[in-house]
Image 1: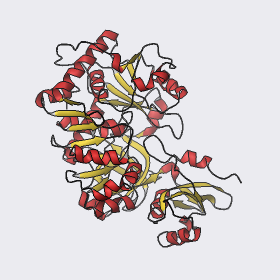
Image 2 (image 1 turned 90 degrees about the horizontal axis):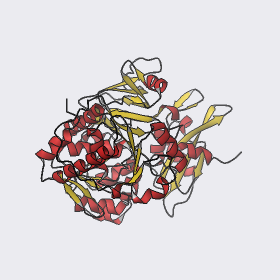
Image 3 (image 1 turned 90 degrees about the vertical axis):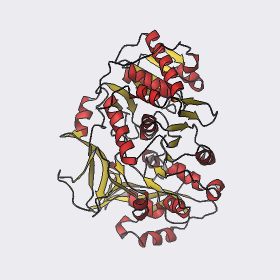
Image 4 (image 1 turned 30 degrees about the vertical axis):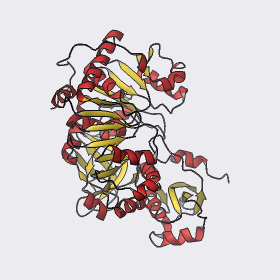
Length: 491
């Protein structure tokens, strides 16, 4: 078992190595500097009189300071609660109240929001000038103590606070390092929001655990991200498909080489085959992963050469977690049979904050029921088919929107596609496709239908195509299908 305060050992092992770099200002911290910053924030927590188990809310864009705050909180037994700064003030106040937060830390860009929040104690991150404590050798924090509460996106209801213990965070990092062969030679570019598990846990904490370098970017810009990849000699980075879509459209992507990169990772949502194609045309390794806030988020591993042959596969379970696909009757699925994906491992979350019943419903005999649909092939490689709640049932047939979306995005005119089911008297549900088109392309329904007929059964072909200018997205780049429903033409 890795101790909760492993970061102290890492700062001493990798004293002079570069730990964190601000992509925009080029400010950088070695691991020694990171330790000094952590000691400053420990002193601050002590000055504030925060007690073990109290919650500290953080409202900030991506910045290096968030990591020493995160580590200092963990070493003092304080629960770190990063909030989505894009939420409304009403939503943020509701989450702060739900967390029972004692303190709000915010950066200067969100002072106007902080002023309207209900928390009594709120402090600008940049006003903190605490003198670092001399040293800290050990803490009394236990592996099962909570370290983070990360709120889910809430696109299908009220956001839930996912409680991640030191053990779950650390086990995810260990599993990632071991399964993905990360080392101190690795560097990542991170634009994923640091209020999201993908930003904190996918690559940043694993790389800091193994002594690598994390380059922090904020406010994603496609060309800037690509240039930074070369400037900082990144070796492995995670972006969501929306980001990759924008990156592959830039002239820089088309012209540049990325010699330092071992692999580009995609996560957060299914990746269109066209993006795979654009990377493979440049002889760049590209693959997908899968996870969720409640589990990791890292759960699978696939070699890039396998990903090239099996587009869309996330591969096999990583070393220290288990995977099961279960049918509606609770039995394990057979090869190529679609069922709900269940996960088990020490990386899985502890509970939903203040939601005892929802926590119970999320588990079955130690297995986390993800709500995602998956299947595995003859080689034991897994494919994520879509969300269980998104499945469309038309005329008694199960229809998986992701399959139709991937088909549509193989058409040269279609930039993005999202498929939903709407109630229909005769068949139960009707398949509707929302699409955006590339510049200078025109809508041609007959052509799109014929394209689908070449790859899909007739019952899967959309009965209606709706062209929109921009696909509504969540803050982590997933299509917001609730908003799509609101765009349906009134009958």
